[in-house]
Length: 272
Length: 299
Picture: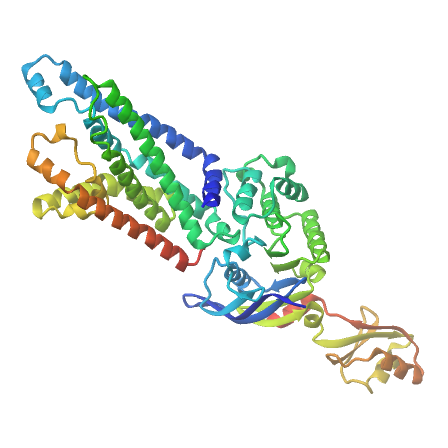
């Protein structure tokens, strides 16, 4: 395992796109959270009666413990940025034909897939660490009274990590199967931003919310819209919160199936 | 002589195309084993199967008597398969660090040594994408040589090299053979193979058409080349030994052909002398590999 991590690190550290995308992510995640916060702050400072009523209704979503949830939700909107680097990492192996060379040099086919699993795990951990830092700083800065229940909703750290890993695993699967970075990325973004949103909305209206079983939506529902955004429909919010454990199980199983398929496929096919 | 690689009845199809049809042969330890064949004859497919990047449809292979290739075994084999495969954004030295990390062959000093051996040391920090075709090939050879493996699998090792580079690789392979390494080499450069290989297998459209020591493959029949003051008289006399006699006007010699392994130079010399002809030349002649290859592949 140490050998796999060391080798992947050698590949990663010299890859400029990895550092660029990491930099963009490090800017985008705080930026989106700051955007949310600024909107809330503008509302708080608005002296009109309606605005003050709204403020009373939503409380402060950026103070603990709600900050863990709010920041997780805002950050999760940008999972497509690290997805770019995940797709690049696997498609590079096909472009340079190093997926063959790594095996020729002495890895087993399973070790090759494990090395990519490590990549996805490392990127998920980096993204989670970034989210954790932003949530911590946001929560501390917005604490209006003595801190208590700081870690009350800190289970969102785990949910965020699982969601990120699950969605990056889907991105990996596209890169693994399609092999061409731009095509894989295009299909992933189409599904992530357009297709599933349309299908979820359609199935919500026309059916019994079967959209929750769609690959990305399944893990999206690990982090529902924060309470302040859902207070206009508390019943729906409660349903979504209650469904989180079910989505944890579904996401873990689905992500497990993705990786099991990749191991099986790589063992079986010719490495051309 | 023990066997490094034993191939038994290997077959491989790509859809309707049969790339290998029941190929079997053994690679003896310490040999330089050439796998020859025209384009599309299955050389690279064969090497891809024994290096575990392609799956055979039938048959099996044994490395050192063990079926298939375990990762542990592949780590001990230095390989260059088809094209140099490296991360284009990384430098030459960083790419070799990855090879070292995966295979466990060699150390930091060995990496520098192989880069010097293939004359890339001065460009070790340049990224792979800036290398010329020949330099890429040299890096792939450096990668195969890393850690001094006892077995090397080289697919067209002189691809993209200039004449000096080709001669250097030839010397390198001879040096490896002298040190007891086994080299399995696919090539269509017959002159190169003839110069360095001890054994060979010839493939044609996926079928094995000849295998064994190079000398045996080349000598499908015994051709004896003779010369004397009177060639016509010599040729007439030799008709009593064989009906297959030719006078090579260009070379100025008489050639007599016997079934493989039956020519006895001592008897021929005595026969001519007792019949009043003194020979000025008497040699058992080998065919050129190129000629034999064309014969075998019907090209």
